[in-house]
Length: 273
Image 1 (cartoon, one colour):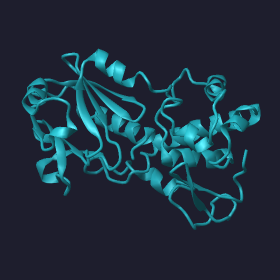
Image 2 (tube, rainbow, N blue to C red):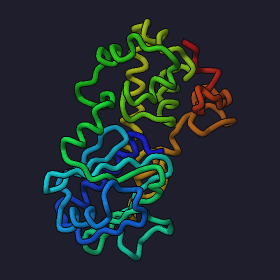
Image 3 (tube, helix red, strand yellow):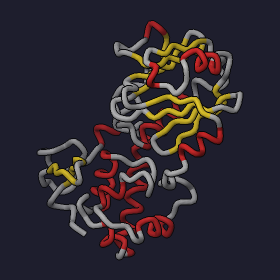
Image 4 (cartoon, one colour):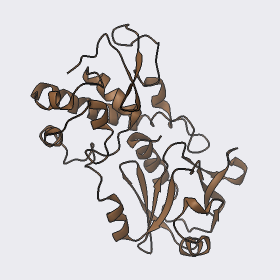
């Protein structure tokens, strides 16, 4: 599932392509992927323009010239592609938004969605999300306050969108590895230690920033000639590397289940808190 770095990469790349271009057509192949009748949805978009692309957690928010918002959540299996009809990916699409000769293809929106909302509705839809980990107002002290009083494992805390937004299965494991902590560590034990809390905070910052700058771990290019998207996949230290040698200590990466979520870690150099 796309996480903060993947969606931030999409935001940056799409902002260079679609802003202020008139929307010339809309194709909806799956009604359940949108929240309005197809005709009303299309009429609202055709002739409109995207004036700003925002990311909030794992969502992209396309700000339209008429004040409305298109809110995208790709969920599991979702991706997007920007290109001409000749460059169309060999995948079924659920929604297509046309900008002249170029189209933004929405692929794999079986669990995900593209909803047309007002500004107020968008704020309400995002209201239960925790703060952004890379927000300029985020610091070690504020992060420590987020952990105070929390119970459970490090894994479940990091992926809880109500606590902090945008982190999922991949980057929770990568952050735990960078911090030298096992994903099964107790959050309350980390919160009670200033040293561990600060170490975790700096690991979160470094992993997410590096991953976003490298295009995230999902390997499908966003457009023809895109060599950035997915570049971080080769740099993942533990995620999806079960049985491989740890790049830090040479130990063997293991996979476990933590409250129904898979987690990858090195038992040799990651410690239980």
